[in-house]
Amino acid sequence: MESSSIGGQMPKIIAARDKVFATTQAYVDREYVLQYWVDGDVDFRVEQRLFSVQGGCAILMQPNRPHGFHTIRSGNCECIYVRFVLPADSRMLNDLPEVVRFSSSIAPTVTARLTSLCAEWHGELPGRDLVAAGLLLEVLGLYVRNAGEKSDEPPSVHLPSWRNVENVIRWMHEHYNQDVDIAEMSRLAGLSPAYFCRSFKRYTGRSPHEYLINIRIDKARELLCDATMTCTRAAEEVGFPDVAAFSRVFRKLIGVSPSYWVRKYLGEQRKLAA
Image 1 (tube, rainbow, N blue to C red):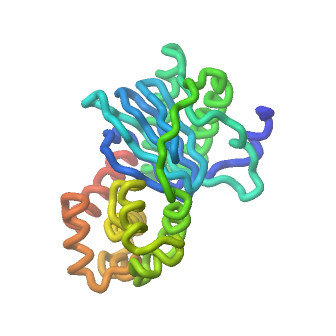
Image 2: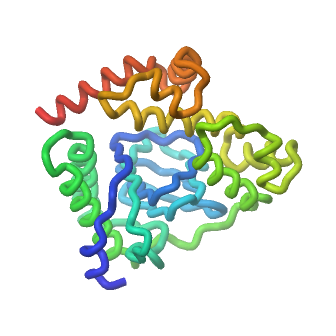
């Protein structure tokens, strides 16, 4: 890939978080995901392959690729992640290794750029999107430059029917706010309901219902980042029958009420902008 291909195609950041600590969960994101380890030692699964990653490693995942922590060998696994999209015709990230291991001389620069990216993206200063996108482009450039420092080819993990499950997961991300049932999802997967549920749980670590609820709560948090969005409207838009049910599930998954989460989020944004 030529270096000039990056400069003409600006990414659009969808989400960015630092100080994320590893949990044994699985995810499927519709966008590109760059996940960088500041510290830790884990086995990380992307589709059917396991990668051994430590501090200074970055994983670049294409859209709709199931991924998650498989084995956590260190109790302090801190990472930074950025979800982003590219123009539909972009080929700037094709043919890159999934894992790059940055040297000890470069890793602090990557950490600093990604930490600044998160602060900019969550801030309210003019031009924050451009500054954050520029920082992401710099990190992607370093990823390309160090693409030769990839990890050894990882072993495959045998996951029967994972393609069937993957098709349903994509569909769930598009229809999360609708009433869906196991019969419809298993039909889309081309599997019996019982086998579909077993395969889904083995593949993602969650039942189909749990996974759908997590999609709805994640989407609700994105909506609630807008200070004009009410909890009632967010609950309605992501598919909950009423705000009481939404608040109950939100508290169970996030640990705090939606209104408390909004106050805390807006307070952090004001601090970053100060």
